[in-house]
Image 1 (spheres, one colour):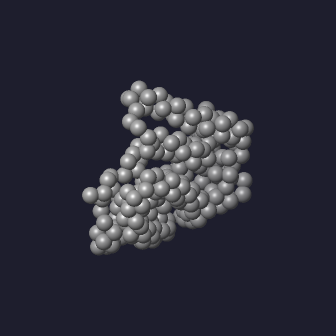
Image 2 (spheres, rainbow, N blue to C red):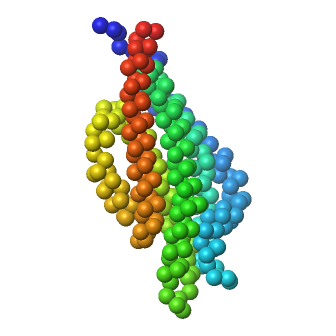
Length: 255
């Protein structure tokens, strides 16, 4: 019987693991702060950029409002912090990878980095899709449905919360292929089982889209259709990973 692939590195005492974890957390936080500090000087510009999809559709002379005293300061600050985390996300994920890598098999180490990179890129793609395509569509529907004589005055903090909800929904929906590959790699499901449950998934993504998006059919379709297509991409990717896995394991055992 072939020997099992050896772990990279020797086992470390619990205290050494805790020290390493603290180091990685501190480095991740420092990376976020390095990005956040310069962004604070452009917090107002960031919010203006975020509000552009709505402001373009409002009648001339319309503005957003702040219903809380500190909202004009805190809301752009909150946005800057979120953007800093999003920009520093590859660095944060690298720190997570560096912490867990010594305990992984060689074939697992080869897969983790591509999964982290593709997951980050897909999340960014989902946010971009929501900003450039979904938000203008949603706001056009809302403003077009406004009764005559009603002025649209959106609160700055409520607007940020609404947009972030959509960003998170689309960002995580675009993670579908990565989630599927991880489930297959852990043995939770097989590509054949995923393919056999297409009809349930199709219903599920439409139900989830109805809950996560505003109550208009177009925005629900704009979430459900890409999510289902990414489910199919995930099945194809998981089949490729499963087919490639035995060769990778054999190579590790014979090395």
